[in-house]
Each structure stands twice: as C-alpha cells, then as structure tokens.
Amino acid sequence: MEETSNEKKQQQKAYEQYVKEVTPTHNLWLQMLKAFIVGGIICCIGQGILNYAGSLGLDKQTAGSWCSLLLVLASVVLTGFGIYPKIVKWGGAGALVPITGFANSVAAPAIEYKAEGQVFGIGCKIFTIAGPVILYGIFSSWVLGVIYWAGKCFGVF
Image (tube, rainbow, N blue to C red; front, side):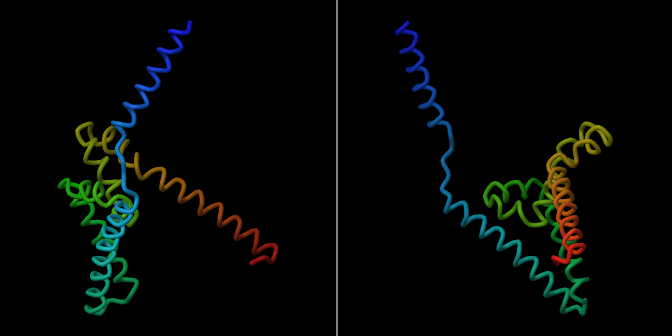
C-alpha cells in the first residue's frame, strides 16, 4: 500500500514538473506594453480618419460613422488575408478590444466555416465568438435600463 502511495506521489510530482515545462510563461508588463502599442496604433489610425473626414467638411457624427466603417472594413480585410490574427497574437487585448477586434471576431468564423456551406457553415457559426458579447451587451443594457427606469419612477435619478 505504501508503494502505491509513493508511486502516486512520484507521478503527481512528475506531472507537476511536466505541466511547469509545457505551460508558457508570460511577462505581464511586456504584454501590457504590446497591447498599449497596438491599441494606440489602432486609435491613432482612427483619429487620422476622423481628422481627414473633418478636413473634407464632414460633421463629427458622419466622420465618426466613416471612421467606424473604415476600421471595420480594414479589420475584415486583414482577417481575410490572415494578417489580423498575427496582430492579435502579438498585441493581445490591444487588438481585440477596439471595434476592429469585434469585426475580426465575426469575420474569422465566417472564413473558417465557409467550406461547410452558406447555411450550416457561415450562417450557424458566424457569431460563435461575437455572440456572447452581443448577448451580454444587450442583457446588461436592458438591466441598466430597468434600473434607470425604476430610479426615474422613484425620483432617484
């Protein structure tokens, strides 16, 4: 009985050592710096689009719409060419958080499941990544709306 207990302990130690060897280590500060750089570049591109659209005489709302449209288009095109996933791998959250990351999360499954057909491939799988974001975004908006409405009814807001 002692032998099996010792064997189990040795196996556990060997397994822990194996996990330690194969688990990638990440430098948090380096990851944050990369995210800051990538997110900053995306924001600078967006600001450049806004400034250019403003110089053409567009109002702020129309310029913002064009900015969003062009950033989403660029993200989808870069996803299609396999470039945006490399940016995401290097920049992490800096590339995933902005509107470009959301566009990537819709375009990537559409490209991946294209071979399965329009309905069962693209139609069923296109929101596999973005779906939870949309769901919880709508749900939390609804909850906050109900809280705001209740607050208005009771004179809190």
